[in-house]
Length: 286
Image (cartoon, rainbow, N blue to C red; front, side, top):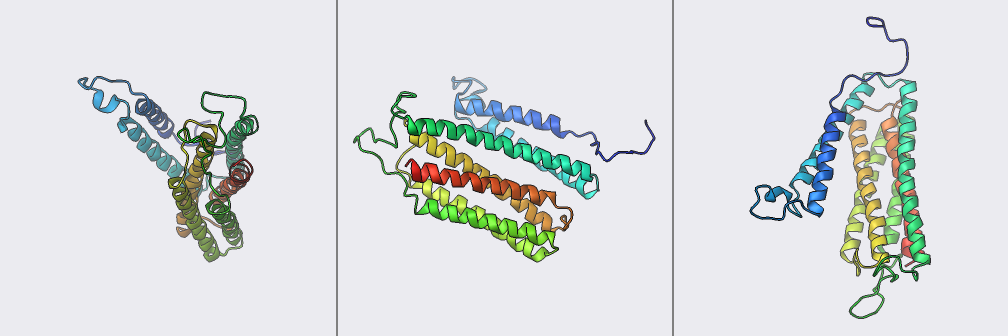
């Protein structure tokens, strides 16, 4: 009833503009992506040609910036709620369940991808699509198998980088639990640097690829899997960087630091997925 004190542990959020704002910019991003890929106006004389022809990035860029703005604003409000004491133990459990379900949904994406990958790798003699029956990659001009990546050079280096980053983020979490803020800071900083190093090595690897994305099953599988995983590494690195700034700002305590825990869970998920990618994409089915 109005005027009575709240007598439960659940947090009832204040009215927020972010769901509506996020939905709007999400629509603009999706609509802009369609325009960028296919276009809606082909006549150069049309008044809307500038931002609606195929390849026009303006609406997609506006939507992307709007989504980033929504994420920053919404998550800033969540941090303020946490700092205000609104995240009670009951709310904290809900946040944990939400993060677990989010990671589970990400796991299922990679399960679906590995499903079709194994289908193509094992049964590639059965034509799936025109031109997709060649494994690994056959150069159409020479008929020779194109050189794939040696798994024991850059891919192995990236594997070691991610495994090391998994230990440093665990170090950071363990240090914070025991009140060692200096150790937690160093652990997070090193993890962020290792994440940046992984991305740099992958960019270097892509620049030396002897095969492309389209025209064959292996190339499409390779770039789809490693590229999507690389996007997760970038997101995880940003996640950990925000946690580092929050740690330096004094937001985390040994008893209350779910933001860092969630980032660590996500990073370990990224590590485990890479081990499967390295084993099967680079080593077994090269």
